[in-house]
Every structure is written in C-alpha cells, then in structure tokens.
Length: 402
Picture 1 (spheres, rainbow, N blue to C red):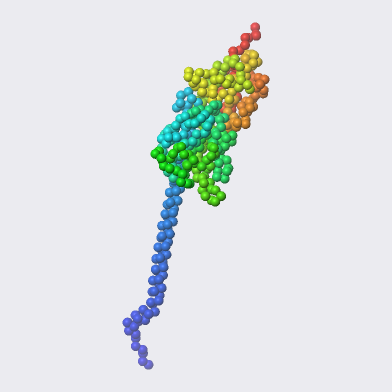
Picture 2: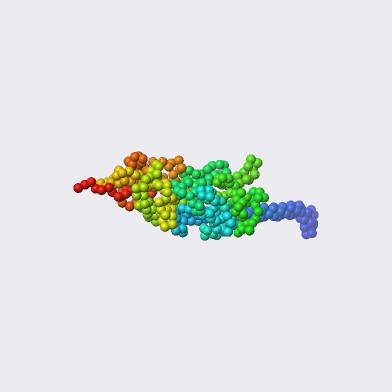
C-alpha cells in the first residue's frame, strides 16, 4: 500500500492561515472593543474626577464661608464681653454698629435708639481680615437696637432681649425675642449668589452697596431665614447662610469675668450711698432721674441706667432691722441673675421674678434682716449670681438701750 505524500510546508501554512483567520479577526475586533471601552471609561473617569473636584471646591468654599461666619461671631462676642475694657466708664456687652460706608469700619451713630441697624460687617473694627462667603461676597451684619453701642438703650443687662428672629426655610424658629436665650442680639449673613439682576457693583472693598441690603439679603423686619428657600414653582428665592448671637451668650461671657463682681459691687455701693432717704418711685423702683452726674461720675451714671431694673428701693421709718438691734429707714434690693441663667422674658418682670425670698415688697416685709455691710454679689457660681442682696439704707436710728 502506497503512502500519501506528506504535505508541503507551504500547504500546511496555507491551511493554518485559512483555519486561523476567523479567530484572529475576532481577537482583533475584541481588542478594538476593549480599547474603545477603555477610552469610554477613562473619559467617564475624567468627567467624574472633574465633577468631584468641582464638588470638593464647592464644599471647601462652603466650609470656608461657614468658618468665616463663626469667626465673625467669635469676634463680635469678644467685642461685647470686652466693651468696657476698650470704652472707659461704659458697661459691658454692647455690639458695634454696622459698616454702612463700605470701608470695613463701623459707622456711628447707626439709626435711632432701640432700632435695628443693618449693613456690612465692620471687620476692621473687629480686627478681622476681609471675610467673604462662598461666592466672594462681603459678610453682612444686623444688630438689635437694644445691643448696639450708639445710640445706646437702657436698661441694658443680662435680661435685655434681642430684637432679631432667625428661622429655618420651613419656618421653624431658631431664635426669637423672649425665647429661652433671649432671641438674637445680632445676625451675621453670608448673602450667597445673586438670585436676580438686582446687584450693581459699587466702589467699595467688595463691590457691595451697604445702602441696598435688599439686593443681597432675604429678610423682612428683623426676621432672617437660614438656608435655601423656594417658592411654589421650585424657584430659589432665598439663599442666606447665617450665624447669630444670643443675649445669653454675651452675658455668659461677661459674668465669668474675674472683675465682674467688683464692677457690680462697686456700682451697688455707689447707688446705696447716693439714695439716702430719697422717696422711691411707684412699685418701689429706683428714682427715674439718674442721681449721678454724667460727666464727673460717668461709670456710676452708666451703670445706674443699665441696671436699674434689677433693683428695688424700700423706704419706711425705722422699719428695717439688721439683726443686731439696728433700725433702718430703707433697704436696697438687688435681684441677681435668674436662677436658670437665662434672660428673664418680658412677661416675667414682677418682683417675685427677681426676688425669690420676697414676701411682700410693698409692705416692706422682705429680707429680714438687711445687711449693714458692703454689697456681696458673687459671680463664682450660678447660685451666687442668682442670690438676692438686701442692704440697709440710711444710718441706724438712735439706740434705745441704756
């Protein structure tokens, strides 16, 4: 049997080529698809990275804006707590007027006494850098008329209420007058991007016109809204970001000062010495007319105006005793801070809201005995700050003993 001739090498290669061509072609198409997919994925990743970078940048700007608001708040708190240090003979606690000239410096006086004032944050007055929000806008600032430094309002103390209201976009109240913390004494505002073609650049440091608050802020009559607000059609109609200061925050800082007790005790002693046997006003209030000269007794004059609602003055002939046989014609009462540490709301200003140990102030049957010693306000503890003080007034009557 004859054998078949062996195929030539060329024929073998030809057959291999014919049988392998479809597989090679498939592999090539697979490679091409893979390359296309890689490019698509890479393009998607680039887009994703760009979006992530944009989101991170936006987040950083938002964080920076939040930090700017908090820095401004801390600076304002420091200004209030140290106000007397930097303004001789004045009381503690006042806040600066806004910047209404675009210079970074407060402009005084700012409006009428007791009226809210709005403008740019006076960052230079507060020794701050030029703070901006996430969109490059200057920060704005509103201050209650009860807390602004010029013109001042009286009385002014730990029961003074802020006049500003802060709420969420949903209407939830975050701060309001007569709430637990006393409302908002001041609000710092990051205005955000313009919501309409209503802003025109002017020649100020940041291009904002302090006289056109309505072009930047979405607030009305002292009510400020935190966050994004939309109308019924879903359009954004408010985008302010806020930080605010409660009256309690200001006076929490003040009463913890080491020199605060001496400040009050010195003032109480001056009032005690000045009253003598002057007749009390209605409801045992201190005399309406300030007995201290504004120029020569400025510190006592200012303290009297600021703190007079915390006192009662009881007067009758020899009806008060000091516990050691001395009889007195008057008693000076100082109520102390509310035991809660919160400002007393405007609805809680009866004698019993100030004097926990009072029995009947009108009849002079409270605080027996009175103290012939010096004023003893103690700010070392909450109970010390809330303690009632009862001081004997006028010299003791002549002794009836042998």
